[in-house]
Length: 189
Image (cartoon, rainbow, N blue to C red):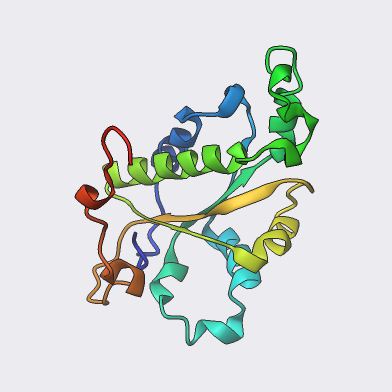
């Protein structure tokens, strides 16, 4: 994950090709419940004004993140999944009864797959990318962006050209990746 970006813009055709990867991933029931709200240039300030007020920016640990020329809000529509699973070919699942019928909210599963597709596409084109959560800023940001009620955000993706940096990795990155040998369980637990 890149947390230090150059402010240089991404050519629109490259940006759109990377973002198109989000729509090539899985979607339960082939539900079309994913939207990407793409903020570029000066529009990225709308995100930061809600999620990182000016008075907190001076002490923000990752100031280079604020230079990312593209921010993408990954928005999912739980209602679209309920509607899709209300149709005759899926009605026997019972998932059309409402959001509460879903033990696993597949709108977040599919949204996560879309995020990973964008991150991999960005990496393959030499871009830096970072996926991060909105936490208690979700609805305020969605309101500022005019996103309809009932929609949820999986998180945000920052995209841009990585800045040459000597900054230490994040505390999370310093813990390393898990050893697959510890977590692969062949034939059962």
